[in-house]
Length: 231
Image (tube, rainbow, N blue to C red; front, side, top):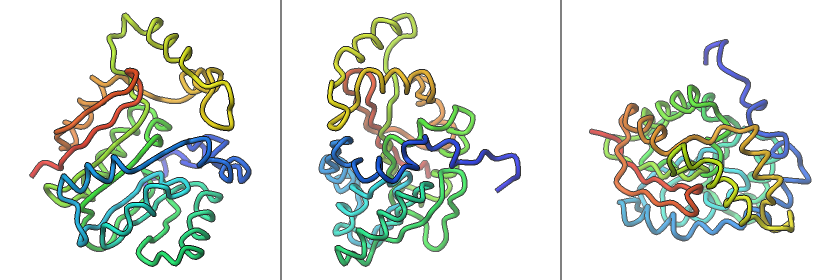
C-alpha cells in the first residue's frame, strides 16, 4: 500500500473503535442477514465458495453465511471489532471464519480468488475517490463472474429534492439510540461521512467492471446492489 493512502483507522468512525459501542452494536444495528444470504445463494454461492466480508463489524453476516460456503474471510479495521470476531468464532466453535484486521484499502487477498464479496454500511466511510479505489480492489479479488453484494447509505433521488428527502429521512428516525439511529445521529452521518448519490455510485461500479443485476432501495437512502464481475 502506498504511503499516500489514508489511515483507515481514522476513517472508521470513532464509535467503531470504542469497545463499549461495539458490545452494544448488534442491538442498535438490528441487522438480519437472511435476505442477503438468500440472494447470494440464488446468485450461485454454494458450499465451495470463498466469501470476503469487508467491514465485517461484529460478524452478523459472516457467521450466518458460514454454513453455506467453504470459507468466510471477515475483514475489519477496528481492533475492538476484530477482538469480538475472534471471541465469537472461538466461543461458537466456528472454524471456517478467518478474521483479518484490515480495511478496504489495506486488505490483501491471498489464495484462491473470492467468489463472493459482501459489505454493509462501511464503504460510506470513504470519500468518493477512495470508494473507487476500494471498489477496484473488490473487483480485482473476485473471480470473473463472481458476485458482490453491497449495501450502504446511498441516496436515490434527484439532487433538487435533497432537502425534502433528507428531512423526511430524519423524520422517520427512532428516538431511542439503543435500538436504532436517531435523527441527530443521521444528521451527523450526512455532515461527516461520505454517502453518495446512486447515479454516481452506479458509474463507479461500472467503471471498475462490476455489472449491477439487482438493485433496491428503502426510503431512497438504504441501497442494496448485487453485481457480477465482468468477464
